[in-house]
Length: 105
Image 1: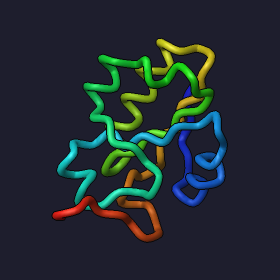
Image 2: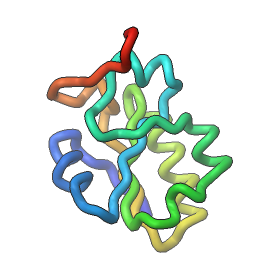
Image 3: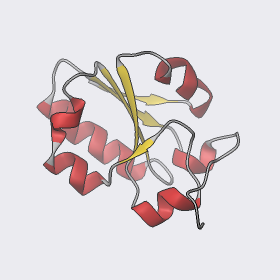
Image 4: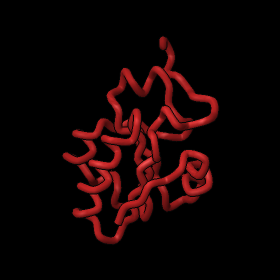
């Protein structure tokens, strides 16, 4: 199953041990500004290697504006019926808060 997740609720859900937060943008996009606590796994890489999702009940996905996150959430929810996928509504652009950067960006 999948749902939209307002960006204000990211840390509420993301702070549970059965939740993983994944930024599915390319590394360059991620490094220019991302939400603290999100790991970066590019969308194609994630769909090709879903083993990382096995231990988690909830998966939060974030992209630039929410479009790619929605597509990936739908694809993954068809593969994993026992997990709940959340697409951050509006992506990183709707996130109100400080964004982290990678070194050198």
